[in-house]
Image: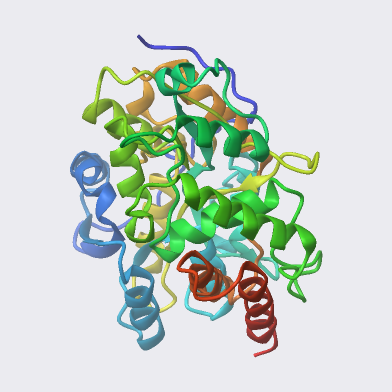
Length: 409
């Protein structure tokens, strides 16, 4: 049943799709290339048809990449000048590529066309702005929520989702029996793993870097406590935990084999599709240490490659794709302006609303050029404690030292 939503994050909805396009003469047909992840490929067919109906003189040539190795392929193409005209980037990629000079500044385009940046989720704009230069516009935004199986929690004696990480451990222990795991933990995929850890860290009052992003903060008590939490939850995770990424946990959850796990709103339609009868809901991420609620603003933006020879046409596509009307059809989360995608029209409010509310507490990762490497380091070093190769204390010390080294390179 379609639900109406009251969004914690209000944005001024000014449609950019109607802004005047840069004219392209009939004899000046242009083809612009576009890279994105393969998870958006199915939705792009309709988007491409809409675009070419409105812009018959600017053709699209898309390519969809798999997640594994995607950022490396971007880096290589952007650095050697063979990148496509338009690239869809995770928010922290935008920071990295913008710092490296691989993306074109959008300032003049935004000013010329009068695009109101106030309509977008502010954290996404902040993450895409370096030294006053805007390098991308967001078409997708999300943060993590806690997914929980209502029936499994009820069988264990719990009628409400956990509000603190101590309660998560308690409920996970109570739900772990037979072939059911109490908590779905990521042991694989640096992106999934690092987002899980950083979300737990922020919700416990910690941070990756200090306030001005010049020093590592991963040697703090909160960082150590969070690493211990991650290790503790491994006791209630599936036996395949070290090989499990987010998709594996989602599949187990959909099959009733995991009681709780963290993920974004994009998982909800996939779970419903896999198991329409599953009784599940979402809650905002638990906290610890009486910390103020805080999570990671995730999402994707579109940028123009600095090496593009068709920057004006590429900008037209960036502006159009990030408009609320189009982004709602393309994304499978929330748009860059905080509106839910059309795929959630028939998803229950108990699932969608907590994810919408959580956006108000989400902040982008630090805008430093080595943020991708920092996330890889978190994964590399903390993975060793999960495999019992080192102690929790040793893993955290190494992680802090390695991130410090990255910041001084």
